[in-house]
Amino acid sequence: MKKLLPFFAFLFLLNSCGEYVHPTIPTRKVDFYIYLDDIRYQNLLNYGGYVYLTGGVNGLVVYRVSEDWFVCYDRACPHDWRHPDSWIWVEESGLTLQCTLCGSRFNILDGNIVNGPAVNPLYTYRTAFDGFRLRIYN
Image (cartoon, rainbow, N blue to C red; front, side, top):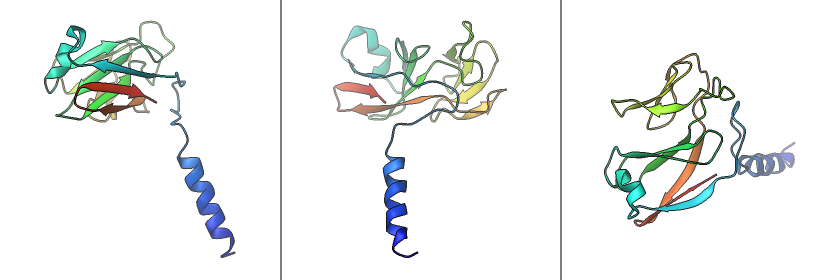
């Protein structure tokens, strides 16, 4: 049995390095850069700034948390993403995101549910910032 433990540990690590699978929203390939000196992304120059982009399932929302921390979510609501009127929007407070159809609300820092009928968090994309350009990918 002790000889099998390293084998199972290796299988676990191998499996955990795979692509993230959301429980309800399908995966769409996303991998592109945006340059913050581009006028279209000027809202991302300030902390708390956000922009809406195309891509993913229902579009993307990118939010700047701090100097080098950005978050990116799919605008598809995990509760009813197939409905054509279901979109995630940044609320006026700038602290939460809300679905226009079901009313579910999500924390803007981590995509977790604040309240809803939704039971799953938002689909999150990875970000990497080098001080000049922001990479959004999965």
